[in-house]
Length: 251
Image 1 (cartoon, one colour):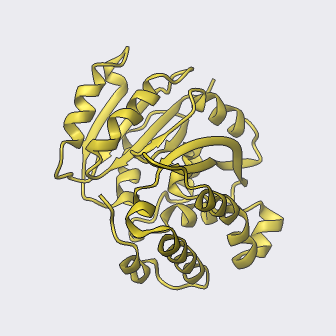
Image 2 (spheres, one colour):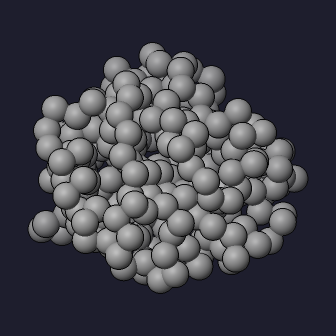
């Protein structure tokens, strides 16, 4: 069975990281390793990671590293530490199903599939964001259909985003150049565009739970508008670096 390396880029995730790691501790079968690449957090993120490592049956399975705060760069650095056949990129505030490793293995066993991701349900302490979750699900399909129809129909392009828990073969990741570290946002969608040269991009019919903190901060209407505008402008070629000004960090 192919091995899976889970890579988690973090920045000031002390509040959310511990429950995420506890979900990962209960994976069956287990991942080969979990790699946290921290972007020089100003809170206790690394301490939380190091303390939680002792709860694993094999503490060495959880590795920690630090680098500059740039998510694409952090995930590329995680790949350099990885030894698994498959790479899985996970946000520090996302909870995964216990059979994640089996899902990845089953999906990528099909040689026509180059990359996969799951369905993200956004929720918080007081509610589940069903409307935004539905929009995010549909966006995986309508965005490539609108902006890359040839790739959508002929190459099986779908656009996945970070909270969908993206995964791919390590060799394909290396062959396409990994994440573009010059992109402050939309780096996952950009990777999908390049990975579709090696096979289809698939949204797997399984659920992950992601934090709604950005929506809680912005409000539902503002969040939906920002997501829509940024996606459309990026789709017609507007620089992600310029668009980043409208996508403030929420911590």
